[in-house]
Length: 188
Image (cartoon, rainbow, N blue to C red):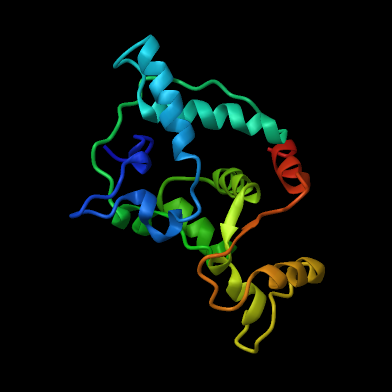
């Protein structure tokens, strides 16, 4: 199986790097929460609820916490038993893509511009590694400048946390504000 099969939860092995360890997924966290939920569910109804369904339900329940909509989640997904970093690399657009590239990437997967907005909006909460956006802070046009579309105060704040070539620091995205998330979900 591929897609919505919980394969991002699988661990890497000596012979295979799993999705969760692929470059685009380096900021994923909370695996222990899903493990705890799965353990509790297994005690009540063993072998009946997949990790894939648990992920879908957790996402559904988390979105309203940031003033997003709630929706029905059809259940019955099966868990995958294969997880490859190469799949994440081939299917997740890099953070350097512009809007035109993102639209084309989503369209190639049968997804709409609305899907792009919804999924991008989901990335305005949580955290990100500095390396995923540092080019926008330090060398956006090749002239050692920041992306002019970014708020200069936000650029200055990020530069205090993120040095060029920083591969380990993690920062809050849209810290202290749900403004963008609220705007996105209100207009969908």
